[in-house]
Image 1 (cartoon, rainbow, N blue to C red):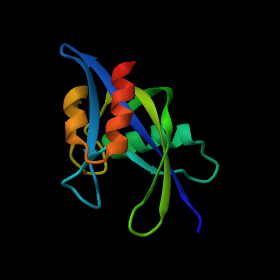
Image 2: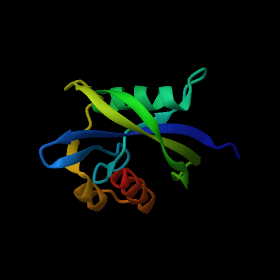
Image 3: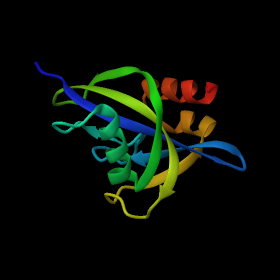
Image 4: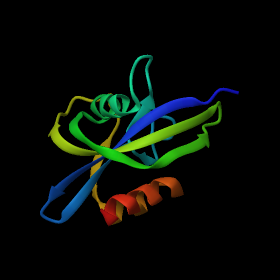
Length: 129
């Protein structure tokens, strides 16, 4: 079976309290907070897809910093998925997105807010610098 390749962004900004991370509500289960992510389109690099998906899903334009962790593999109920996440530093934020809720969390609160252990591990990497 073919794996679906996706890319996503772990978007960060510095504010008075320190480092904050942007999470969005999952489309398939809006009770879950996740990182913006989506399919890598033909001719697109994973890094380009991560930047595009954060713009489309969260209304965020950012600077790509680096890949975070290795690829995350899971089965979404329909097919096998591989996602590479990238650290993205916020440049500009717009209200325009695909309609899902979004929220900035201090990193330690984001660790508690995400549902998947793989996401918590990626946030620990981000927090460690």
